[in-house]
Length: 341
Image 1 (tube, rainbow, N blue to C red):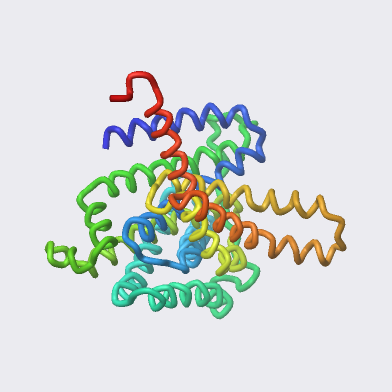
Image 2: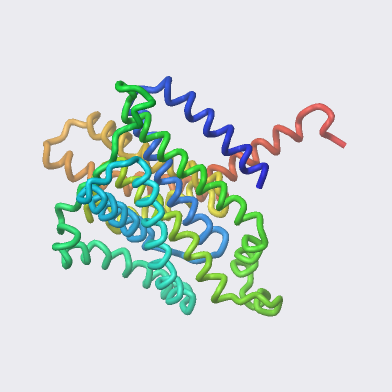
């Protein structure tokens, strides 16, 4: 616990220092990475540590995003504009997503393999449809605005809003990572891994497999809900198109590329999710295409790049980017003077 807190404090200080040296758009990008990191870290716990495959985490992010939008809108209608309302809204987003995750997790705990993937896939497909069906609440395809209070006056009148966004998203993400890091190293984390490795042996050891799987899904849903809520706060709006099935696929591929089963790998996956649109736009600009062809290419190119990257990583580094770095560090240490026996 103390070690994780120390790392989080050091990361927070570094984040504050870096935020002063970056232009506003880069601060916004870093804040977006932080938001995605909550979701990829939660999915790492579920898939990497517990062995459950989820294709519906984009829908869980949508639950958190719409919850924070409705909460902030309710506060705005009542004239409550204090900065503390955002904390309440984020907590509400996590709690609502946890409740949804518990329901989905209870159903998923009874299934295995493709049946489990099918249930989470259905969640990813149904969630956007519900926003259109209940358009009176969720405003259909147009989505909802997310009113957010400006930075505190104590920071100054001209304090960049993007820097404040990075501080908010970074603080929430670091808290999430500290909690997940402690969970992974606790008795619950060992239980997750035991169920992943061999369910029969886990049962013989006295572990309640179904309860453990539901708990893993709930923890993962909490991370996804917080990530979706932060994305909605950063964009100051939420719509069903932002949380499509493609996002769920991207999240799963991101944690595999980053390093399945490693929380540090979730960071690489989150960074890739943010860097991919810029890379796609750059590649599209390099080609001489008609506007219609460029639009089609830009819509399909991210998935193709992700797929190619996944194939290359699985061949060259089965442990993902983080696994490759860990092996490189271990090799370097072994070659240092005094390390050989």
